[in-house]
Image 1 (tube, rainbow, N blue to C red):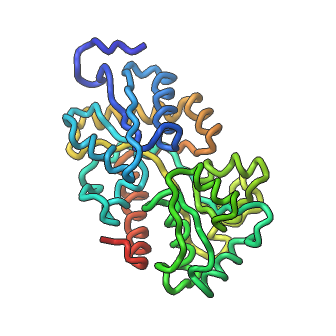
Image 2 (cartoon, rainbow, N blue to C red; image 1 turned 30 degrees about the vertical axis):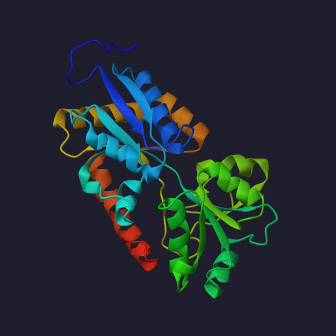
Image 3 (tube, one colour; image 1 turned 45 degrees about the vertical axis):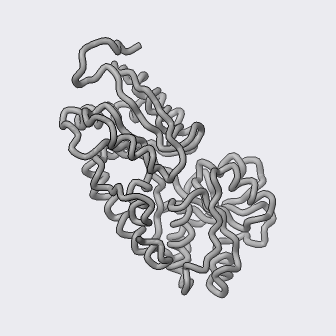
Length: 308
């Protein structure tokens, strides 16, 4: 057990990790397996976890900015860190934060109820090309990679008016799955890790995956690249602090997070959840993943009038 009574400074006696999601969600689980990775790596710092779900992650990010900027409070978040600003739900922007490290990636999938007439992504795309509102898509939240995993392939396939695509957002993955199984939506766009339990049960089938190449856990399922589209969507999760964090805290977080992700405990739990451990340090992450994705996402969202 870390000694939380020792003097302040880095390494600190305790830190606070804010998961920008509700208990049991992807961000919460990523935060908790990171904490387990800290313990497995022998990092002598106590991690207190706070859940702040809802509001598209805005309350969680605001909480980090409102606390003392001493390097001990961070937020576990996804690409909503820039999507929420792009779509006008908050004035907070990526520039208000320090990217510390990417921890995991997950791919997006299209799933349909077993026996659906939409047994291929091509059939879906042909229908919405002819009539953009003819297919009911279910997604988890707006803005999100679930949403972009519909808009980007539709755009590249030649759908003229993306704003007419019927996207129905639900409060969480459970609601989304229930609507799909109940036949009230035709196609669900969701994270692969969130779909695998239903896939394994035989209730749903995957008809497309946003990976750069075929994945072993979805044999025979085409990628967007297989369908002639230059689209890869990595649903990453990572850690951010406020801008102007003390450099010693930035260095400590990056080193500690790397050690945690590399532990067998983290890898074992990530595999069980169906997510991929993929550590990328903050500066490289910002330049090679976040900024390019921000440009691509903004371009697509502009086509549907969601950029504010």
